[in-house]
Image 1: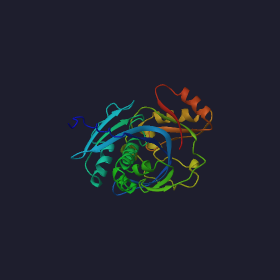
Image 2: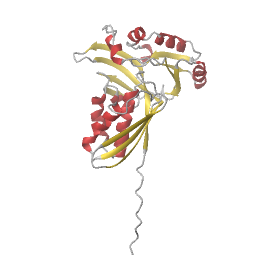
Image 3: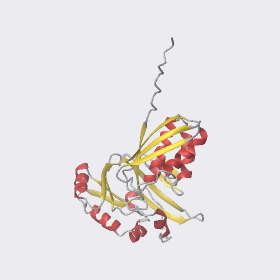
Image 4: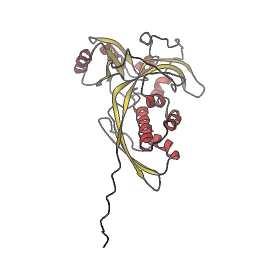
Length: 283
């Protein structure tokens, strides 16, 4: 008599991928484009910490996507229509129907200039590439359609960005790899579009080889929108061992590079409670 017992169906394997914080070590805005974007030159660098994304995939009769969001900055985030879901939608046409169950652990502040949404989308692209065993070229192809910073976040390594940030030239920067860095955000969301709208349109020149002598052209308009950015930068620059303090992207997050871990950790311990901060390293 045949046994009525059935072989248990194996549980789908969950993969986990970091969505690390993006920094703009320098950002020069060169001109406004007719399509509403801006031509710029920037130097991307990435930290060793950030959000986390995990996902499983199993066969289905049609494509399905379920996302849950946890973490200290999960409140108010929609689980549908976001960049993570759009990244999934962009790759669906090249695979058979599957049910994706994803979880985003949101550790970075929202709308903070650290590439959070773009990094999350890029992490989703990398996860799906692994889960579906895709050619990475598919992810690289769709990344620019998801946002100007998504190609850099997909790479997640030091690179010079031109165009609207999507034209990338990877760089070897051993002098900053592993450098201690403190990220500080005044916990005031700041719209990237609003900051670019307030840029004065003056081209102050190209980004040269010495990024430490460069600038962030979005810092002046961002300061006008969020006065606390000036307070954060002044505080960071005054910390012992701070080698450089600058705003990242369109703000409001700022960062400081330190001479050593001890100096960075001391600054982190002294950071005002009203601000968010993260002690990390550059990749």
